[in-house]
Length: 89
Length: 375
Ligand SMILES: [Zn+2]
Image (cartoon, rainbow over all chains, first blue to last red; front, side, top):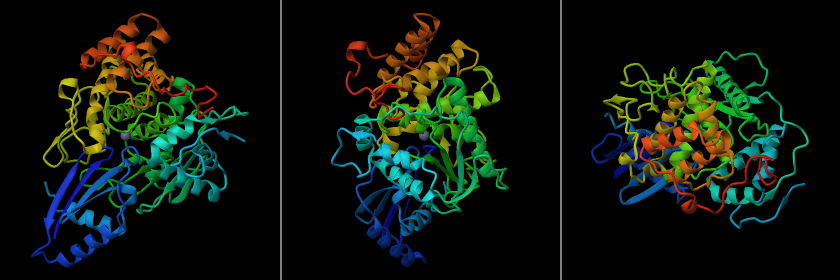
């Protein structure tokens, strides 16, 4: 499973992007479960939200969802953290 | 009772002005749910604007108090709001430094708007100020959710606690001031203006607290927020946009200082935190040209622009520039202030819109007018 996360907005205005492929990873099962849960819990389309709030774009295989920070589920939050922590740059 | 003359089919059942009254209610059971609804309502700005403009609010019978009504909450590293109440107005300092910094920052902001412009709190009518600290886990952000301020602790590697810089607190509360006045649409150029106005007054709040002149001020936003080891002084520089940081992990500060480098992007509502560098620098040029305390003449012109009822919610830079020139003329006549305003905009490559081509429709009601939400 391919998973990509882009975080935009926020007071700092700094965009963060990271992606991963679950195949061959020791945590593949967990990530896949989180991604499925995140997709199920998501609402769409995303509203523009509050000033300085984060926005997320999450792509899971062919499906992309957009979320305001206030509407990210627990699973979504865990997934975002796991993917963005890949970004060591 | 107040009346709704018109409403939108997409609006929430309870009109925003009522929610705002409930949000000020003393009973937490009443105000919590009202504040929650207002926060959700912030996601429906168009609806909200429509409703606010169509409402007739009676004149308040009592003058709002000249002191703030602050309440601090601890979100305890969760993302539910507001969290647990930890310090109310007049309480002794907490043992938690974040709580005390936010409490003091709300006080400095209230004090600034009252002393500099005679404004009572963010809505001009004494709205109680609420803030939640310790929001989320290692959360690298602070934001205004439509009814309160929210601060994260930072991740401890790149960012420190977002309650540290006073200008961050001032920035967030100014989003509230904008919401209750020009209500600049948070997208594209009007969104960059919304951001810039928050940076301008955020910086002025710090300058006011420190009694710094335009020449002594650092004009930095987020000064002291970056952890040691990060190459940078702050997140933004109004004096020299694009120079606040240059770090292997964060990259280089991407803010433009001139229209020649305006950033076209769909990220971040059209680059609202990037292109704000252009009006930010225009304000810096004006303030340093006039000298003295920047909140006095330069800040007054910007404040009149934001709250005077002539700035459309969808204003672009050229329209905003034109309204600042009009505001300078209205307050100070055809003198050095207006000339400095025009020179400042020229310095960032913005040509003020001509009167005939400016957006003529849907200007907000001026502050103090009967139809304004703040009465
Ligand atoms: Zn902002």
